Image (cartoon, rainbow, N blue to C red; front, side, top):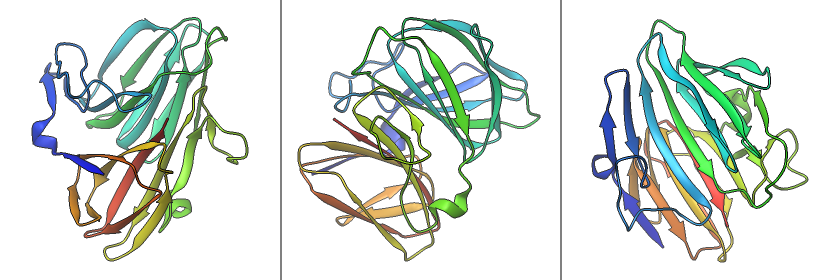
Length: 232
């Protein structure tokens, strides 16, 4: 039901300006056992040095979610969108028929992000970008939906795929339930802290691939900040 993927087991490469760890096969890292988890294709744990970043480059047909763990990331694209997303907040880029963008750490400190790619179930649409703050108070003790491909998920940023990105902050000893459904998959990563799921300890930046369960109960062993993708 739970496949623990310790941070120490992740692939990756340190480029100097970028120290990247990959939960799934990406770039020069390939593991045939870790190519995707349902329609979740990429989960990169990136540490970006101050005043550096990703220069303009293109994407298409991918939902790209950036969750900022520390620092801030500044976005610009060829549609004229620009914005700065701070720690605890999220941005979504639907690459659609094609978009070129840059992501830059303009801060004087390291920026740490989770970069999450989900394969879209709707293609051929115009590209788009959006961001919004999600104060930690809203997700205290419970999971809150940050991005969603489903109607009725309130203020969540829209994505064009059968998936949700949710987050929670838990104090040590607190628990939160999340209904997955036995026909779906979840991938959970603590940004900070450590949690237990069905007797399995998941430390900060570890991955937990979860399936064949209706509902998971996550109990914080330490004060923790969690990100989870609910995937088809």
